[in-house]
Image (cartoon, rainbow, N blue to C red; front, side, top):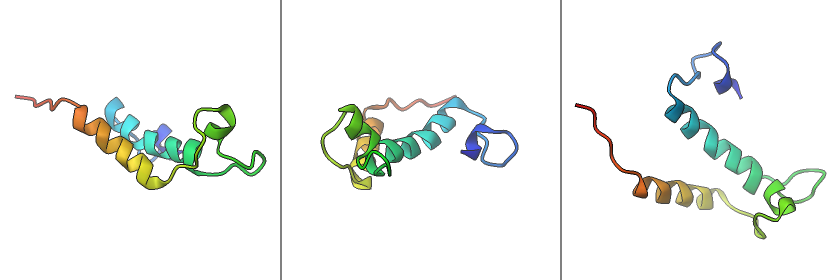
Length: 75
């Protein structure tokens, strides 16, 4: 992912922005996309989950996490 290098405009200057950009992509790779040689998702192969997730499941997970996150305002 180009977000890990400083050579592009997609570079994250803050750790929070970096985590927000990387997490959904990693979740899709682990829980949604079926691996060619495994014939299941890596999460299913590791026994983390027993169902094939959809993008809507990941969006619901992110929204649930944001609902519990305290709002921080700078003065």
